[in-house]
Length: 77
Image (tube, rainbow, N blue to C red):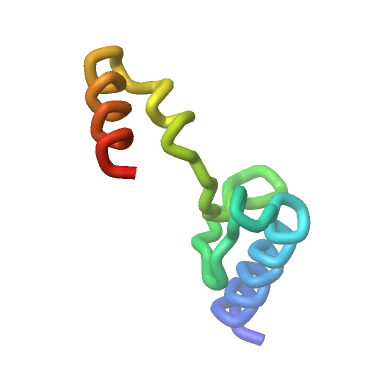
C-alpha cells in the first residue's frame, strides 16, 4: 500500500469516527470526504458542519443590527 493510499484510508477512518463520536443529525454533520488535518498530537481535526438557528445568531449581533434583523424576519417569515 502506498503512503497516498494509506493516508486516504486513514482520512476515511477519521471521518467515520467523527460521525460516530460527534454526529447528530441536524446539529453536527460530517460530510463524506470532509477535510482531515493531522497535527503532531495523536489524532486529527475533521471538518464538520454545525447548525446555528437565527435566534442564536441574532443574539450575537450588535443591538442596532439585531433590531433590524428581527424586524426583517417578522416582516418576511
